[in-house]
Amino acid sequence: MSWWAALGAALIGVALRVWQYGAAASLWVDEAAMARNVIDRDVSQLLQPLDYGQVAPSGFLLGVKLCTGLFGISEYALRLLPITAGVVSVALFFVVARRILRPVASTVAISMFSLAVPLIFFSSNLKPYSSDVAVTLLVIAIALRVVASQPTLLALGVLGALPVLLLFFSQAAVFTVAAAAAIVSVDAVTSQRGDICYRLAIVAVWALAIAAAIFHGLSSITPADNIYLHNFWAHGFMPHRHPFGWLWSELNDVFGATGVAGLDGTLRYPCPALFVVLAATGAVATTLADPRAAALLAGPPVLAVIAAALHLHPFGTRVGLFLMPLLLLLSVAGADAVGAMLPWRRVGNCACLLLVPLAVAGFWQRPPPYRLEHLRPVMRHVADHWQPGDALWVYYGAGQAFEYYRKLIPIDGDVLVGECTRTNPRTYLHQLDSWRGRSRVWILMSHDYGSERALIAKYLAAIGRRLDSFHAPDEQLSSPAEVLLYDLSDRKRLAAASAQRFPIAPGYRPAQWSCYGTMSAFVPSRRVLAALTRLDSR
Image 1 (tube, one colour):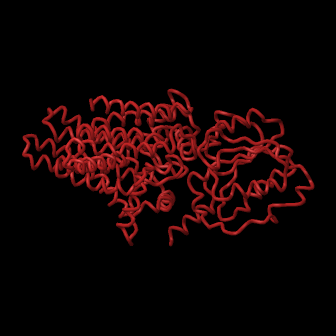
Image 2 (tube, helix red, strand yellow):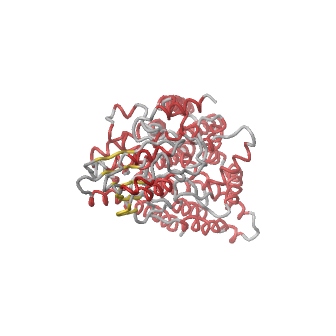
Image 3 (spheres, helix red, strand yellow):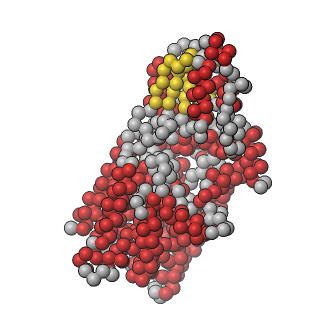
């Protein structure tokens, strides 16, 4: 009976991921930046450092490039590899959970995995996060197979070669392959297997592949990328002061922080501290029951924490999504272990079922489909209502997605993509002033920073008259993708205000370095690069 319940939970997970994929949400800013790299570069150029502060494994990039070559450059084609990885990860989690946990506990874990908001969201995102999850689970399944049986030499060779190939598709797989290599080598020595030499040879190949993957990962980003990414993900690196408090906070955030749909990479569970304690309990209980399985589940998170302490890789958030299935398995194992201690055995066996309502509560806060920065219908509105002589100003936050969608929705006419200058918001007003005197000027907004949208809207209201507005339907952001149409030809209004004289409230923080990456739709300006240099010299 539990097998069928687990299968039903897995099928729900597959259905939710396919539903999100079928919603055809517009590419948000990071996805658009990745799409532009894939579309604008040939195969050889994809093996070089990417533009716009993007980082992705070569196998992922080449796989997406193949999909666009076969099926075009639509969102469906670009997200075909991520959704495939998302669906496969459900099947892999089913296998791993059934192997490690008891029947009822495995059903609970599969249910929680299926309903996990960030896992659903990123299964239809043009980022390698869903591939990281699938590869992590596949490596664990391979390691469990190697240590739990006596495969033939041919099978052992195939199982040994797979993780090497998987490192080509997931940079995060370094943590899981390293943990698997340690377990397989210890098991080969302590179990005194007859094929110990072959197993140790496989471990040696894995070690060389890990070293190669790390070298390739370090060489795939420029010095400017490195500075930017370390500052952008600064909260994911362990501080020198209060490291345990930081770790407790980060783990709580994995289970319970709230943010924009799945973008924050958290589960939004009530009582997140409970899940952290249960995960620690599960690590101890699994170690006592099956040390090899425990090491495979707890090893990657421990290595990830060490990497965060050395400031090599951030912990938590969406870049740590590959750890989520392992933390879920550990938390369910902890609940199952606590239940097993109860005197009422029948009740104890089902104690972990109490976690399901909490998982449902996290899911129900934001059920799919998720549409963030839904720019495609907004640009379609502009194209459908465009008239000769119209002009378009694109806010820099919408620049990446605009440059992608203009390949699908051509807009012929005067177009200006704004430049990001977060230390001086008055610059945006000067950019708008370039259209003074025009009777029809479209203003395209998305992914706005702080109060810049409000400032721009206030200035436009002072110098012009609004003719039209349209924002994306069904979007889960307080500041949705939006377009405004203004008449900027009224001389009286234009005389009353100018970019230089318009009052701007104080409080803008100097964060020019954050204009690097996705916020620069073209080559970053000298001011941005100079800000990064100053940041690095501190």
